[in-house]
Length: 119
Image (cartoon, rainbow, N blue to C red; front, side):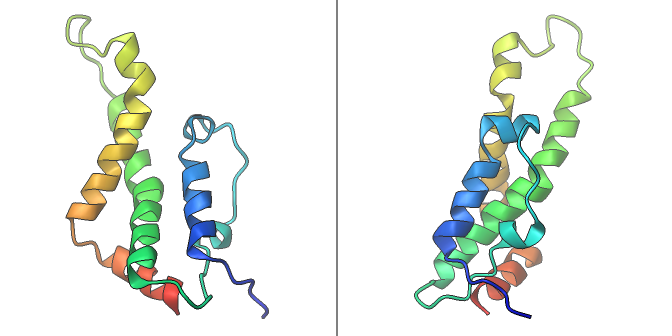
């Protein structure tokens, strides 16, 4: 099977595209898992680049949807309910929080994806 080689920068571009406001609303078209993962097989990719791409992938794929569903289930009364501004910017805050959670935790899936990107 002939698998195209992607550079880590290509993977990061896809991850950034998936974090766009349109993507967070679900307006964009779905990409294949292979496109998102990137399967970076080119020389010059460092372990740090692969780990960064894996961390962003895990944050976008696993943590952000979880955080979105938790925020949507908020049934707080008006004085404690999120304001319009909070609702508007919550996707950006969730994205940043998801990335920080992944960077500060030791998730085996991040290690595995980083190894697979460099393989």
